[in-house]
Length: 394
Image 1 (tube, rainbow, N blue to C red):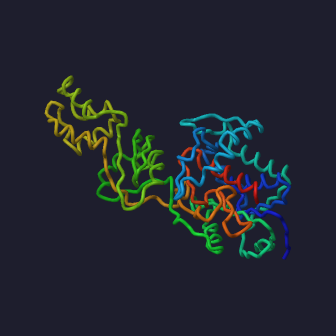
Image 2: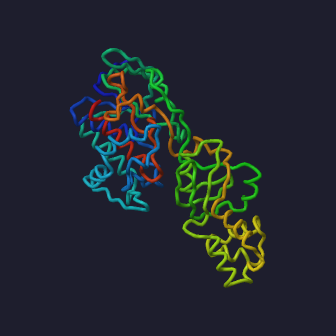
Image 3: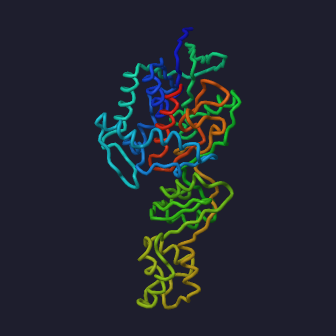
């Protein structure tokens, strides 16, 4: 069995791992990245419909969920979205803003992968694919990582293997196993940015709405997101739901406003005065999609003429539209979750370097750490920022 000695061994050839390796290599460190997959950066390749939502112009600490919300501040400030954009521009990779500060490649996400691999080569780093760790030992001077046919010896070990989301891409709980091995705490991982599932009888009642998309304000816990909502055959999805899912904990309700920015009660009263013979569905259709309006009319007051509806009935209709409360039965889980909420406890890591406290040379970066961004490029920015920070010290 061959033994390979390096200064820095990075396990995980994703966004965070490659960024860390590039930065460590630029400091003159001998760097090797290994990954059990046969191709690097698969999450970059598939993200954003193949165009990679690589960061967000509005990136700020408030857009990240963690048991310690201040932990991410240092890394995000020292390597910001503007720093990564500068690298994109230096490589002449064209990009555009899609919505709400979300930046995508004009062309292919493969351009970002090519940029990272080029930077890694120029920094003197090496990459080995199809190599998965089978054992790990920590000594006083470093670490010994065993694989099927090779042993790797390093002074700095960086764990960049991500969380449990998207298992079809090779996601595992390896990072948590390593953290536990060295006595670090774990914030219980759970699926984030994931659709809600709804059980009967609520699901049966809304089944006819499957496929319908509409703007909405969705509140879970103390967070509210106003974006699109999609009715599915299993429950609810869409950006607003995915965002709220990261803050939802079972068993609890979510509140949904299906007509954000409107005063439904006032608008219905005006419609009743101006168009008394119009149906409730017609009145609601001025504010929400007709199919949704018909469903709400039939399940609240009946599709009567507006003139036949009292203020009390109109109030009940308005509440159904603007404060629809339901309790999800759960989420669609790891299979469709875009990120992992929770992970390696930030209390056991340095916010400056991402190094484990009390275990010199051991670093955790990216999604495996208890820092989770909103939908829209924030999680990639955390990968770039945390990888950069660790690369200055590993």
